[in-house]
Image 1 (tube, one colour):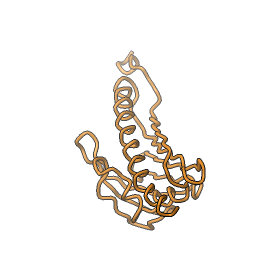
Image 2: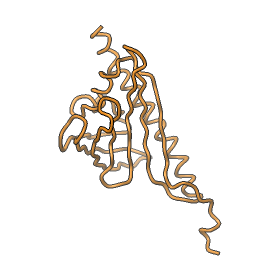
Image 3: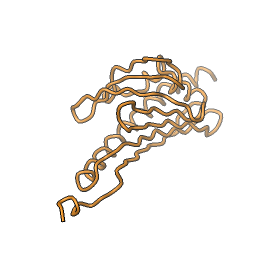
Image 4: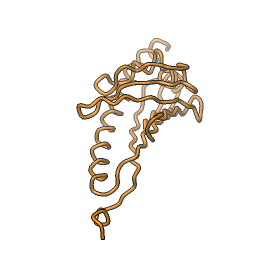
Length: 164
């Protein structure tokens, strides 16, 4: 029996999601998220993301972005392609170099509020090391998403009030 057979094997994928109610109508919220030139750059928390640049496109489907993500004192460079499986509701960023997918889902609650879910699926190792990795990444991404949703709410709420 080899050493690996003694490890607990779990799923090699981690799914983390956070949902929040945002004080603005769903179309306004979606526009902010999908606009990678002027909107999305204002909702990403600078303690976690830097240097977001648009390589192609700029709004929704077909956009290609690059950015730096800061985690645990390390900066990771990333490139992602944006798709819209449900335009106006679901936007997906797929990392072009790693098997990481982040999804933004915007659902209307009523005329002036929406519910936004940010979710990420990423590969992790198996066994005990993977279990630790998943626990740490789950906690980290949870903090990132809470900060991003709070920043999104802060950005669109004044716009919603001005439009009323």
